[in-house]
Length: 387
Ligand SMILES: Cc1cc2nc3c(=O)[nH]c(=O)nc-3n(C[C@H](O)[C@H](O)[C@H](O)COP(=O)(O)OP(=O)(O)OC[C@H]3O[C@@H](n4cnc5c(N)ncnc54)[C@H](O)[C@@H]3O)c2cc1C
Image 1 (cartoon, protein in one colour):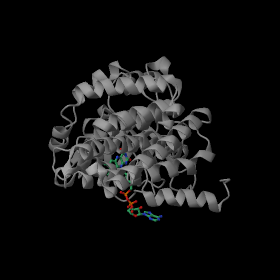
Image 2 (cartoon, protein in one colour):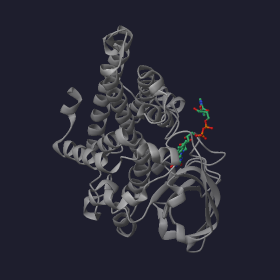
Image 3 (cartoon, helix red, strand yellow):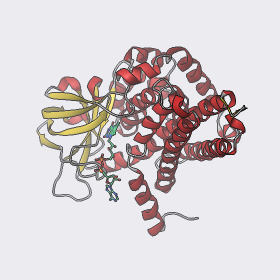
Image 4 (cartoon, protein in one colour):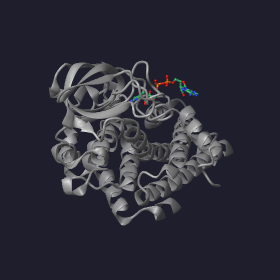
């Protein structure tokens, strides 16, 4: 496939390692989905082959701040378990990378090695019951009292929350300022008065999601990331990283859907012929191939570009575009795979039905499809984009 030409040797190697690892360790993926069970016992093993260290500095035990590597790890993992991929991504591409990018030397040396080794589980806390798409205006407050901030508020839909040791929390520090009102903090579970309520979901069921309550949690000033008021910048650049990295999962689900559906269509005989011979089926398979390959080319190019121009504002609209297009295509490809597999595709022991439920998440999480369209169209309106 042409898209593979855009991969570095390092990316090809890690893709192969993830494939070997998942082939061996993820045999119970459909059972974990049904039981809403996340095998955290695999976390240490993932750490051994570097997976918990993606997007983290190599001198601190990570695989390096390389978004192409992150995207291909997500791609290959999603073929086997999108839910475990998302859980890993929230730990390292989201929470870990924010500390890696915005943290000072002391913060990084204190937190990154344990995150990279998979010894501590990290989560990122933007969303609140009343604050979703408008994430830059959190109701959670951090009030400075001497050497501490006191954090009060509720975060919701937080991946990893039921098991997290570390929460990266965005909170309002200055209600009087429109622009520099939010700050980001590293909050340890042990700081006290943090409770978590596990939530049940339609998809990504093996990935634990929770509501987190911060009740007068005292966070040392040295745990603030950047300066007071830097929170929105840290959040927005983090969302760009998240959207590129996690779009890899959409590619993996398209790849898995195409493989399952084409294998099935080649073997399933109806009216005396394998159904792959029928034009309606060919139409669906060719659509799936095209979506997979175009989205993959676009994602790899964007990840390579990001690695060269980290944090570039010019990449925001293209990033929104890859997230928008790949997530919608992943849902559609999974749906087509179910259709090709007929009644078998509707059964719980097949992968496309899981991909379908899991892929739907990416039209919502990390910014909805509607918000992606707003980002793209605002850039066109403001002439940030050249054609
Ligand atoms: C499984 C799962 C895991 C998640 N993990 C995390 C996590 O780890 N950390 C975290 O912080 N969050 C997480 N989220 C939250 C996720 O990022 C939010 O759900 C998402 O940003 C949307 O926010 P909302 O659900 O409040 O929807 P809302 O913002 O309330 O949106 C509702 C609807 O209104 C539309 N809408 C909103 N504003 C506009 C507008 N201006 N123009 C047009 N349409 C608009 C939206 O597109 C959507 O269709 C997770 C969510 C899920 C489901």
